[in-house]
Amino acid sequence: MNPRWVTTCLPLLFLSFANAGILYPRVSETREQISLDGLWNFATSSPTQKHDSTWYLRNFRAVDGLEVDLMAVPSSYNDIGTGFEIRDHVGLVWYQRDFVVPKSWQSGKVWIRFSSVCYSATAWINGEEAVSHSIGHLPFQADVTSLVVYGARNTITVAVDNILTNSTIPEGYIEELNSGRQKQQVTFDFFNYAGIDRPVVLYTTPSTYINDVTVTTDFDGTNGFVSYDVFLVGSDAVTARVSLLDKEGNEVAVDTLLNSTLFVQNVNLWWPYLMDPSPGYLYTLQIQLLDSSGELWDKYSQPVGIRTISWNENTLQINNKPVYLRGFGRHEDSAIRGKGLDLPLILRDHNLIKWIGANAYRTSHYPYAEEIMDLADQLGIMIINECPAVGLIHLGTPELLENHKQSLTEMYNRDKNRPSVIMWSAGNEPASSDPQATDDHFREVFAHIHDLDPTRPVTVINFNGRHDNQGGEYIDVIGFNFYTGWYQDTGELDVVVTNLVAEGQRLRGIYNKPVMVTEYGSDTQEGLHILPSFVWTEEYQNELISKFFQGFDQMRDDGFIGEMIWCFADFKTDQSVNRVGGNKKGIFTRDREPKASAHLLRKRYWALAEVLDNVEVPDDVNEYIIGN
Ligand SMILES: *[C@@H]1O[C@H](CO)[C@@H](O)[C@H](O)[C@H]1NC(C)=O
Ligand SMILES: *[C@@H]1O[C@H](CO)[C@@H](O)[C@H](O)[C@H]1NC(C)=O
Image (cartoon, rainbow, N blue to C red; front, side):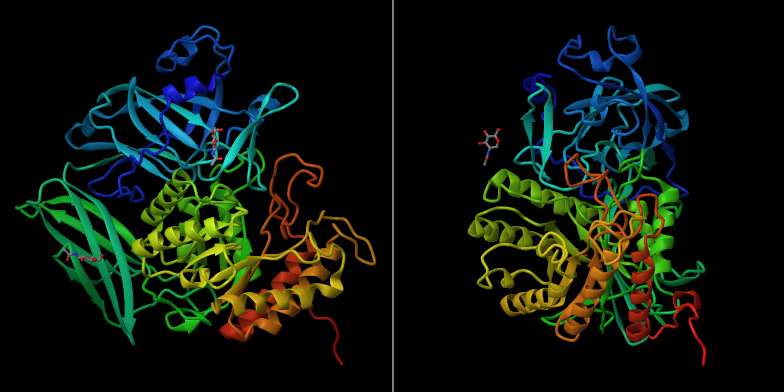
């Protein structure tokens, strides 16, 4: 494909069409919704394909010489087919489908919302450009009221471009292979899935509507406080009724201002999983706009968890109680679907998280689907929410900095009201070789996110700026990925505890901030057993993580606030000589069955819960071995 043609047709970068308001679309008395998920027509561009500059605005099936397939939405497109052409495709792919907009929708506004397209996307409705967006894993939407026809058939066409460059988030570059094919090289160790990975919906709002709401919470003894700020678009000739409903739907507080603080007696705080008998308590903030005659004009309901986050140089606290994070790094990844949202899979994952007794994870290495975040809010899982800045190299370039800040803005706008989000991660393993540039870049990135959100701490994993405590001025929590016994000192279990504790103490010494391990582990082929243990066996994974447990326990009382194993489940990577079918550091297999390590980690996480959260360990965690 001619790259110039791509840039002239799709001037995607640096356009932030995304309205600040990006509320999750919810049906209400005043809002309707139609899902556009399903099977779409699908085509890929190739340099030899015949087309003029607007062929994609025609019915794909009527374009001469265009090979048209079906593609599932939501799904990554890579693993649906049978050829490497689609799996390893570089550049544009095209999606198209028809839909009908009801006549009754004519009276208000109609929106289209994409929950995530990787990476950049442009959508046309009936031949008119509707929206364009350039960062994956984040939602975007547009008002399409004047583009759709009512009571009739409409056509939507979406161009999806998976090219990553030295200024996109994340970064990448195109390499010409010896075969003459192009390859998208990336700066991360997971498969570069692409496509319309999450749901697409059409929904309605009235012409005057609730565009956004920001909620912050506090408590004092048994009194809870919910401060909210509702942003309207349209006429101001409306009045508001904002109420807080408890879990049973009883109204516990009400106000008529768009910007105010609700007061709740006998508050049920949002607690992390296992820190309370009913963790993840959610209220509902019900926002209603009424016209002058008291008729309901718009209504939107926002889940709210009442909790505080605080931090100092030694601890991270939820509701003034220090927390110890026990969890995972994860991926959105599964066979066939790639990063496509799959409801049975995400429920299974959360059932496994409950089973294993974890209370936290990091959304390595990009924001996860909103439906996953909903489960975390409801279960009381603490989330380190990571933007897609993984492995950034070209620090010091203004374009990359702008796009990095934009990704954080969009992640904040989407997730600011989620009680589960207890920390922002500005990225993973920045890989610039220039410590000064790294320092300057992250100083601006951190200022940006602290500006957006003073209520949550910020980290970047494996910060490698200047190590003279410059970073300590702006990083709130130090997260480090540590692979002693695997990438370093391979097979040397005896040095693991010493190496780990030394690194933890070194980082404490430099930054004087809470420290946690955000990755550790070993690749493990399920069913492979060798005694004495050997790399890649289930024995080795168990022995390695046991050594880490010892190290963690030595550090726990000294500003060490958490352990997250890499990885929750096996996942697909690019082809390489040290990856057999993907990264096998999962404690669950890719189809979410436990390796021996999952049972061991379960004993550890429940033992931590017993000691730190005072919970009773389920009988089946520790089986009966011997009586006397
Ligand atoms: C980024 O890539 C472009 C196109 O390949 C190149 O011209 C430019 O020099 C690169 N920028 C940096 C900072 O490497
Ligand atoms: C509304 O509330 C926000 C907090 O979200 C606050 O920063 C802002 O100043 C308030 N605005 C007005 C007009 O009261």
